[in-house]
Structure formats: C-alpha cells, structure tokens
Image (cartoon, rainbow, N blue to C red; front, side, top):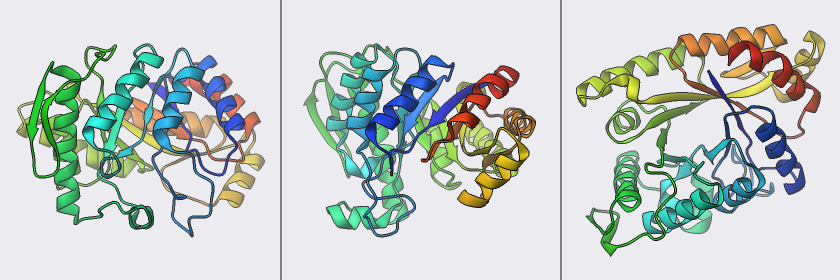
Length: 300
C-alpha cells in the first residue's frame, strides 16, 4: 500500500505548508497533493485565504526530492489544455519526473461564477473533461498535435521541451457512475475518489472494474486511490478531541493508531493501491509523527 498526504492549501501560511511538504517528503510518503480552488472548500463566502494550485505545485516540486506530486484534482474548466500541458511539463522538469495530473469536471459554483468560468450542465462538464484529457495526452506524447473538439482545439501545436516522463500519469477524480468512472476506464491511468467510506469505495471500484471490461481493458492496469480525512490521535482521548473539534465525517482515518491501521488495510482489501491522508490546519504534528512512526510501517 502506498501512502500519500493531501494538503489543501487553505487557511495556512505558506511556510507551514512547505514545512509539511518537507516532512512528508523525508518520512516515506509516496505522494503529496494539493487541491484546485480559488475559494474555500466547502464554499462559505470566499473570504478564506487559498493559494493557487499550479503555482503551488511548482513550489512543491522545488521543495521536495522523493515523493511524487500532483493535485487532486485540477478543474478542467479553469485551464485550456495547451496552457495546462505547458505548466505540467515545466513542473515535470522542476521535479525531475515526479508529477502526476489529476483532473476533474469541477463542482464549486461560487468560484466559477466569481471568475467568469463556465459552469455548464453535468453532461457538458463531463464532455469537457474527456476532451481535456484527450488533448492533454496528445500534447504530452505527439510531436505535433491537432485536435478538434466542441470545447478544445489544437492546430499544429507543439510542446517543447518534452516532459521528463515518457508517460505522465493522468488520474480522473470523482465518484460519478454514469460519466466519471467510464471516463477513467477509457482514458486515465488512475482513479481517485475523495472521502469515500469502505463500502462506497468497494461499490464504486466494482463498477470501475466493469467499465474497464467493457472498454476491453485489464482492470489491474488502472490504479485506484482514495483521500481520507485525518482524525487520528496519539491517544484515544486526543482522537476524540480532534473529532469533536473538527466534526465527525465519512471517509476518514479516525481514532487510535491501531484503528488507523485497520482502516487503511480495509481500503487496501477493497482495492485501493494508495491512501492519501488529508491534512488541514491547524496541523496536529504529534499525531502526524505517530502516523509516520506507527501506522505507515504496518501498512506499507
């Protein structure tokens, strides 16, 4: 089992965020990810401080040496595939070939409306996601790219220098059964779902297997990952206090060290190849240290 850390860059100072990245990179985390929002998530009034994802990924790449890096997930409506391909290629070079691309159809209405981005129907956003993946893959792999879609066009487009990685992994994020999972099965290298219970993950994973079979694809070639809220404490009392302060939630690592170990193993049995713990400020550094020292050796 691979263990990642998902640090949404909201309500946190950049120095503290960089400290967390360095800690994760030097303590065996396989993957470090950001999120892609302009307003706080979940949305309230837009007054919470949030750092932008692509610039954040570049900083993350420069700050680390070992872990793979990415975003769960970049919203396809916010960036033209040409711009995104150039950004990701640059980050791939900064990181010496450690970047992954997470993409989703987008969901947060207030930030779309505030910045003038189109928030279309679910079908249109799903169509846009598929086109974005196809165009991005073409730019990463072809010397000259031509693409004609309803939303995106490329005409004799070139991307130089080429990415460091021969194939930059593209991960589709979401839980939509009608479009998201089929898109992942057809076009992606991986699938990520945020804050799913074990039962939900098991059910969605089975649907994804079916969609892979329909596409003529070996389901084992598609990586599966889940993000889980971090509610673990060094003691049962601390865990209870954390849950009281932050609120009970589905899709979380809750309780003591042993409960965290059992939870992660349950997701592994359900088909997850990577679990990323979601860290939100204020960071409980003692609990995070206990996770590294006691949980990770038991599950990796």
